[in-house]
Length: 227
Image (cartoon, rainbow, N blue to C red):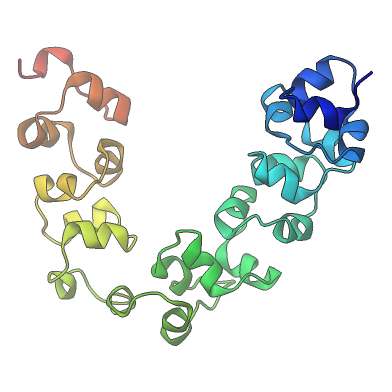
């Protein structure tokens, strides 16, 4: 019969091989490591780890960090396998914990974090300094917003503030109008969390009843909607 490598070269997917009786160990031994179809087919990460598949191979196949972790991979293995801070946050790890694991500040930048997510300290985390943020590649314009009141940030557009990690509630408190906040890209769900009422969204945004309910607004009634 054909080996796993020959079947893969012929276009047979790993899941088709698995269903056909090939073991995960046979595939790994033949360097057939496209785990995406296996994951989609419901093969657990634990079984792949037992067969010798690496964290990197699971990541490239689209396996979320939390699923790989539940499958037995350690946090250190996931980091070595290329899972970035955003991936690892699915494990409930905060920036301070990830920095302690060895991630660099620039890793957070590349993973899509905002400067303020790293800057703001808590009881267990001292925060990253503005100098460290600038050295990692965060823009001076973004770093300059840190620790400033919303009044002092009126020179920034709502879209820019959203990109810098400001919540809709903060823009609302800073006096930006609802249409301005919505136009900046905030979702109706974010507006709901930000303290806007469904009536404001109907009047200012012409939001529909279905949209409001999906976004989590309560109290809206279909008969109250404008035609």
